[in-house]
Image 1 (spheres, helix red, strand yellow):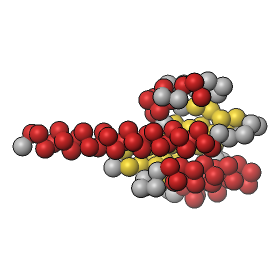
Image 2 (cartoon, rainbow, N blue to C red; image 1 turned 180 degrees about the vertical axis):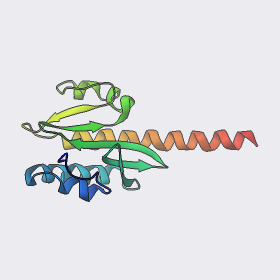
Image 3 (spheres, rainbow, N blue to C red; image 1 turned 90 degrees about the vertical axis):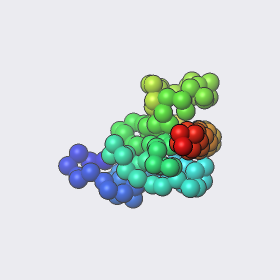
Length: 133
């Protein structure tokens, strides 16, 4: 995304702000996430494409000069630490270099894991509310 552009309001605006080759990767990541999280809603959060379910973030992603950042929360990274070992990562993010194939299958698996986690947390919250009454 160019620094002189206003913050994107939609994922389409976000993706459109990048060169064509990066746009193709971002669209494929978006589609991969949609397939793994069909009930999630698209949003922009932290100025990045975000998918939310039950009002909570499932995953974020973003493009940078030399990599794609993927943000599935620390628990999403921990659950797949062996498969993510080849990539630079931090507590809540992993970097997929643009000069290497993007692991779409892994993005799909991590997203599906985060969906299940989100649904379990939502159910636990509902049960907790019910038990108060």
